[in-house]
Length: 223
Ligand code: E4P
Image (tube, rainbow, N blue to C red; front, side, top):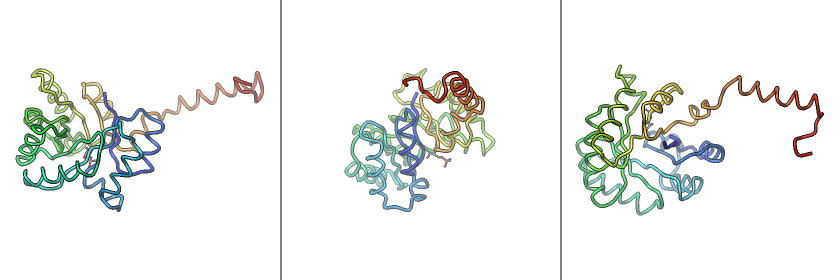
């Protein structure tokens, strides 16, 4: 199951890649503009931090299929290695995903709210299908069920797509989609850091050290 960072912030990415088993970085126009940097320069910097073996997901902005394909080709000419082109799952987006996947370009169908959007994206050849968990919940939808049904459609009908769930605002949301079989999650840095935050674990570590030092003083295990 893939674990992706949903951010374009270089400091966050640098820290998380050093400490956690990270498979890649997802961006979108809203995430990019927060960094107030030149688009390609920022992407090159992210590539340098994550190396050439992790996935980098970059989203197109155009609404028309031909323009989406042009933008995808521009991104591919400039950013190398493991690249995935993100395209919103609109009618034009699905047309673009179909064209891109026919020419061997790896894509992610993003901004997905329903199982049938997921089905069409998978059928069009999207490498990744991305339901928006928190945004579905904000519309009173059952996000976990949407993720579960997309996973079922993909697995039952043997599509090659993976479900990479996105749009998380709580650890519980990530926990829920992990359990129902999502193939990956893309998580903002603040939520990812909370995975390991448990008062009991920190208290246990403190007691281990105190008991050791009571017996052996300041000596470490290797002294
Ligand atoms: C990632 O691929 C998505 O673009 C992102 O998770 C959307 O998150 P948001 O709903 O917090 O904007």
